[in-house]
Amino acid sequence: MKFNLIILLSFLSCVPTLQAQINKNCSLELKLNGKEYDQVRLEIALSGLEKHNVIGSSIDKQNWIFQYSDTVYKKHSGMKLYGKQNNDSIEYKFVVYMPLELDTLKYDSFTVGEESKLSASFIKSDIFEYQGKKFYTDDFLFSNKDDETMYLMAKALNEGFSLFWRDTLSYDQRISKYEKIVSLSPDSHHLMSALYGSIGRYKSKEDIARIFNNFSVENKNSYYGNKIKEYLNMNFFENSTLPDWQTNKLEPIIQDTTKYNLVIFSASWCGPCHKQIPNLKKIHNDLQEKLNMTYVSIDEPETVEEWKKLMKREQIPWRSLLAKDDVKGLQNKYYIHSIPMAFLVFPNGKIQRLQLYEEKDRKLIYAITNLK
Image (cartoon, rainbow, N blue to C red; front, side):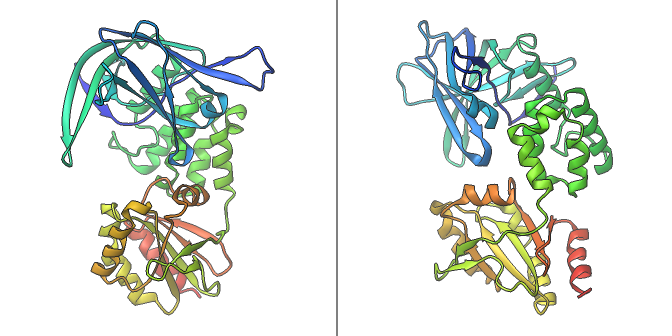
């Protein structure tokens, strides 16, 4: 049997209370066969890297119920399960095995539909080490018949929806493929949240719109549907004020609106970002009379010192600002779901999103600035 490993996703269900229809309690019922736990925690990933944790309730250590609000449900982008035994400090992350037509998909986060009841059978436990830390996992085989939403989500994952990998197709072929996937499941919450979470992977807003237009009207008006519409309608750069990495003095990201501005989002822990530095230095040397460049670090406070060390080590000649006081807010404001990412801001305030590891995008900066 063939196994594919993917790390992503979520799960849940909504059940109306006896109160007004606008107020709902959501719940997931989960039956675990083959292993008992003293505590099972449901970690719900929300928009902007936020997380909402729910401790399950159980009377027999095998049948668990998790409850949360419908607001959490609408904003979720993925969920994970963790279990503890004997009040131990060790927490086991659940790994999901989902049988598909030809493969068995393996991942650690998933989504299910409303009023969902799931059952899973224990397979095995594992321990692995990463960067000097030990991690513990428990593998469970889930049924592909318990929840249609969960099964369709797993199929979309296996097909690489909005991931731009897992196939040998060209970019244009993938866009057509993603359109078809959405057209077959236009009400899918997972597909909508996955599209929103991967905005930065697309070459243009037009490509995102092609896929988005295949969703149902109701889904287009959902939480993530509205987020995507906001992004598609964002044509001008809304300035922000952030502290300088050396002086801590607050400065606007765009200081001179009469020039082109290249705003680069990066972080100390982002290897692909650091690989761009030689290209960025060349752009700066060639275009500094026409183009202002500004780094925006999305490092959290605990890693800001590493960012400062990077600035000194690389002798970065352009400005660098820190988003440390509100990283999540800044990521939401500018739809930064992955880095490296950059915006070219025109003198009139219009913006163009760029992937500077793409040679064509770097050439585009030269072409645009030389028109002035």
